[in-house]
Image (cartoon, rainbow, N blue to C red; front, side, top):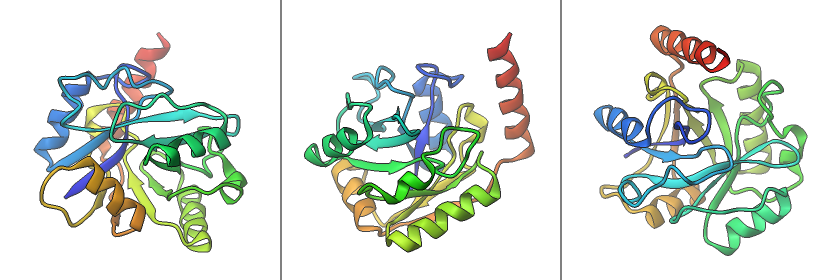
Length: 205
């Protein structure tokens, strides 16, 4: 099973409807987590059995992703967020932690008890991903590869392979927590890069 654990929709700063992202990912054999910024509004009853519910939370230090088996409503203070995650059997990891241009939490990754680290983000600089990979090794934490898609064309640029035949969120979260995962960072295609640039311009106009 291929899973992308960091995807945005129109409910934050993404372009597409959640179902559009789900359908596009399905064509590539990928299941997605919808992790809009500071909201779970995009996870409706119609799609909640097709995705992993989550949020990319803007903490006082930067962005942290939480994944649950329900649409979460987490606090933004980082320690409270981690406590909330563990009290509710959720999974919590810093996204693009060393990307200084996109609110990575930086060295704070070493100060808190995360479940994993995003070691490959398709939009992060190479050196930022390399630092995240090294941090995961130093902390002995699982590493995830995610697309951080804001447009559908970026889906497939990164994902995580796990051994599971049927979609079950609790099983997925447990496998990820144990680190039985193979992160695959392929990188953005030229088309994806163009669509990202186009969407950036559209949002600014």
